[in-house]
Image (tube, rainbow, N blue to C red; front, side, top):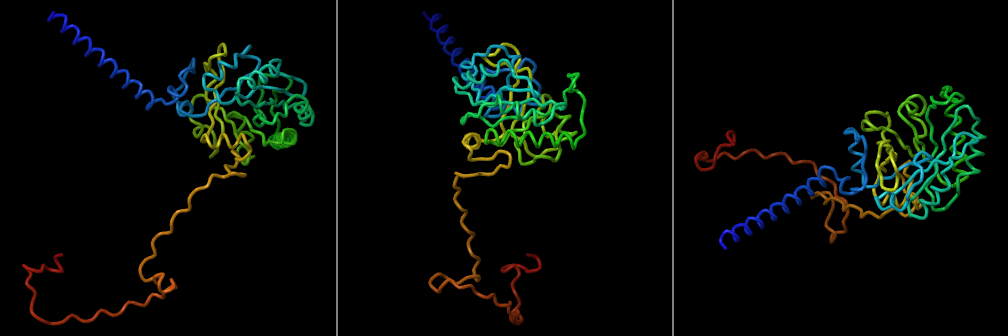
Length: 329
């Protein structure tokens, strides 16, 4: 009996210790890597320490194309995915074969989705605008469209770089065409090389979606502000087989919702309407002598110049031991 009681007491102590250790581990996970607590179902096949800040972002999403195959959008949603950019068009004659299915699947699952167009530099901008208008939906609940601008070194026809001025002119024409078609300011997606060659210092009132999978954006881009960060191409998300790009949104929940509703411009960080009211700070107390009391009308008072210091009176010597010494104090 005594031996059994000791064993039972030891088992209880062990169970309590395990509970405490489990709670401590959960707390450490939340403090050290909040994204693990926010999105426990998501992962990365090849995580990089340099992008840990993106994994801690509260609002995360993905971007997909035909290469992700058949997607279970309900599972994607259940993993906490807040947005998805879906490839729609490329150049002036290519439509992603999975675009329509992905677009409808994301809508049914309740995942905010936006379409993106991959630019071909060998095709006229007007042809690409015409192709985008033909295939990119104008759904009122859709996210703004994305213009994907990067050098396409893998293409024989369109792999050659063009002069910066010509590239900027094409981008400007396509951005205007997308905005006219959807009524929403497009997002610019780019990578490190193209940004350095063409975009640095340009289109600063547009939202930017930047790629960096091995370092913080501030170490790769000469740009003070960004809106989306593609931080890995080897992400793991339920509902998708194999690798998928993962992305983070720079901003608060309030800004994300207001942006979707057209009340907040994430490109300029400016409220268009429905700006949250912030209580005006109380003015600091008025220093004495600057204004009369309210009972006297509160009128401003003029400060009088300082009066001369009267000469010291000559009297009995001070008792230093009692009153102290001015020179010493």
